[in-house]
Length: 393
Image 1 (cartoon, rainbow, N blue to C red):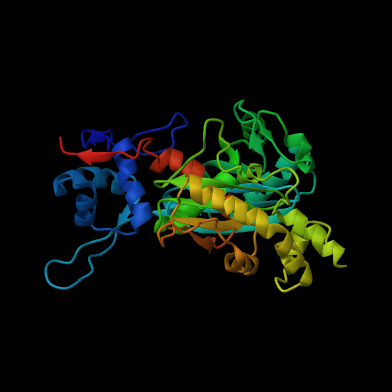
Image 2 (image 1 turned 90 degrees about the horizontal axis):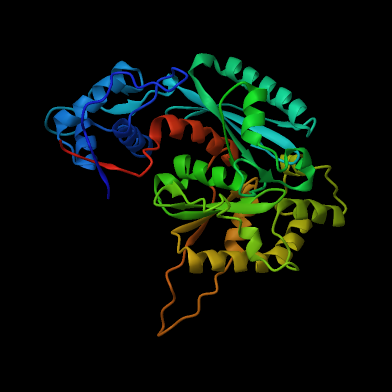
């Protein structure tokens, strides 16, 4: 592992826009607190290998700047009770957006990882400027309803369905989002929304959301299957997103031969129509979803060979600890898939390769919007760029 020193740092480390953020060493501590939860100075010293006085040198400015809070000591057995340090949620927040073919979801995520102001609306107009006006209204209403201080907004993260074409923030989304295709979304959306924005594929940011607030709290390596109008996903390796050369790692749909069924929710919506139950869009289908409907059985029968192939390919190439079923997939349907999915894993000398667990997402809410909201917060407070650890001066 690389090492950095617990050396001097400025009392206020400012971004160009004047908002507070954290130095590289401070980010490591804040990331630990994000993953471990409230911890004592002794806990942080043990986890980082730093002496207690070095921890204090790092912690005190963070407390003064309002990024950390220190609770009253709690007695735990013999000896002097230890005070717990925790991230101060009110210090900063970010907006996370999930832009889908039929709807847009939004959350506010504070510095401590708490979700506020979640809301979802049908996308009234897919043209970018009208959509941005709708989104801006959603943001303003969410901030007001949550009672947040707008000056503490770090930025806006946006997950958009589609894959990158290798040119900045230009995505190639499905036909239903044609106005969003092949244009510099980072520049367009930043100007339209009046804030700095971070753009990524919806599967990638959903995986990041799972890493920050779901399975990632207990597992550092997993693959994430993203079910929506399309099908994709993301990969988390050693707690960090594995995005690939062009940002398209996790495009699991491409594993399937062209004539194999795609296991997406749009195909499920059409299958409901075959069984005499029509929905105008996914939003309507998912509002009162019935996992026991005969259409679900038909969809599963068609899609399980595809899901088995994808899971087996992930299992063989990535060897993750788990494969998470998420996106817009209802938990009741995820549970049915868990029961039926299987790996290609022949025995040798009576042994099979250790396989990944298949589990539903542990995120309560829109994982894409939550993951998107983590992007600005990671950039400002948590991402130390190389997963550095400390060493003494």
